[in-house]
Image (tube, rainbow, N blue to C red; front, top):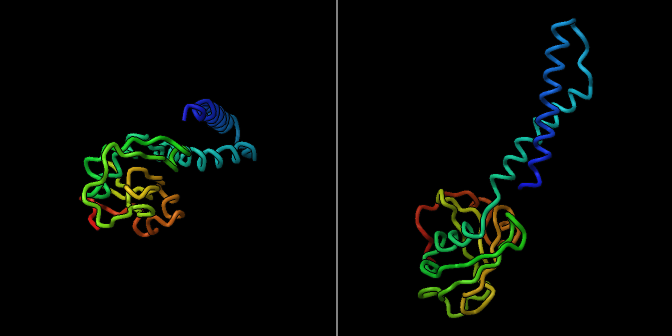
Length: 164
C-alpha cells in the first residue's frame, strides 16, 4: 500500500494544478479545455476510487485467521495463524488446535467460508490435511474461482458461525 502513496500524491498534485489552471483560464477568457486536462481528470475519477477500494480490501493475516472460526463453528477455539501467499487474495493457515468434533473423519478437501468483522462472508478456505490442521484460504472472488463458495454467497450476512 505504501507504494501507492507517491503515485496518489503526484496524481493529486496534477489534479490540483489542472483545476487551478482551469479556474485561472475561466477568469481571463472563455477558452477551449485542453484534451490532456480532460484526460487527466477522467483518469483521476476512475483511478482514485479504484485505488481506495483496493486499499480497503487488503486484509491482514490476523483478519484472515479470525475469519476461519467466525465462519465455521467446528473451527472455534483452534487459534489459526495465517501467512500471506498473495496479499489480499491467498493465505496459508495452520491451526494451533485440531477442529472440535468434525462431522467427517477426513477433512482433507473440506471447504469452509470465512467471515469478516462485519459478519459478512468475505472468502473461504480448503483443508489441506486429513486432520484439518492446515488450510489454504482465499479472499473475495478468489474464493469463488477456487469453488470454495458460490458467487451469491460472497458478501452475505452471517451473524453466527455455520454448522455442517
